[in-house]
Length: 372
Length: 126
Image (cartoon, rainbow over all chains, first blue to last red; front, top):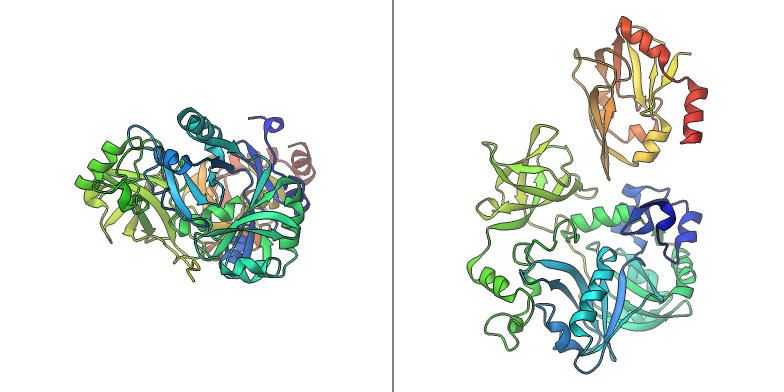
């Protein structure tokens, strides 16, 4: 893709002003890091508060009395019982039970707010329009930017600008005026830390970002740190750790399918791929997403083949790095189920050498969400 | 000129003829970002110009380290192995990678590399 064709977020000029290194991501020119560098940005998020521009992500709303029920026809998640102000993790499935995209759903007073991945937002919108247009209003929100403020000091920092948001707990949201902008904030994120994602009108996004960056706790962080943070937190990246060929059960995301949508539940099934997913819930799966921790210091990256002691192929790494807070190589991989066992030793092939790794529970770095 | 540069953004200094020092340039470390791991060649091994002699890995990616000229590895920087961030903080000094005993043909190759002004020009046009 030529640079001229790249899209920009409303914060683009601010990123350049802050000295960001810009890269292409999902068709956007985005900051991968600022002059502090990925490691420092990662650590600042774990210790204080980091501000991420995630305006490239897709925002949209579903409106109408049938919206929740309609959305349940595309996701294996309980949307109907979500009470106003509550947020839930979900995924769009295909007829084979594969994950088309993962998303966040927040029930607001008058609508359902959806946040989807940047790389999939056009396809998701198309999917919603094709499947649900006869049942509810589908309204993309390109006029809104999205900022994520993440870290143990995110709440203390944000409270200075919007004291009312203090009452939010993990996976809840509320409307709030922040630095003069009419925002909608949820207490959630993609780092494993306490924090907020703030939907803000595009024209006020720069002012809000500057107001947040003016707080002593807050420094900017780019997509590089976002990736190492989410990997340490054991959170999947669509297109890498989950995709249209992996089911939620293979991905270890069965926890996101509430009882009411499972066999025997009041609204069981009724989403694409239900038959496959229900069979996997009952009988298990042949391959599973696992966490791996390296026993040596060599980073193991996406695409590395995982083998057993005899060199037989067991699976492949879908994400991997040297975890800056963990201090060891960490990775996610899909392994044959009989090897996807705690502490099981496997080997990653890196440049022709076998690096020993152990199957490890995720998150690699403990979540520190604020649950009240 | 005792220091020359490669198009792969490595430098080689031949102040000591028996053991020329090789590292990555300031530009290379900046482009890579935080270096978190290095794989250094075995002492005693010979490499031809352009052969992969090691690996330098940042948080984001792994990059090959190419042999700038034909020669034999006589020393590697153990301090860099222990603290790869030296490649960022002092790429032209304490962040060196390895030392090479340059062969005769390697000396001819050395003369073909870019000198400081030529390398600066490459950075400006890149």
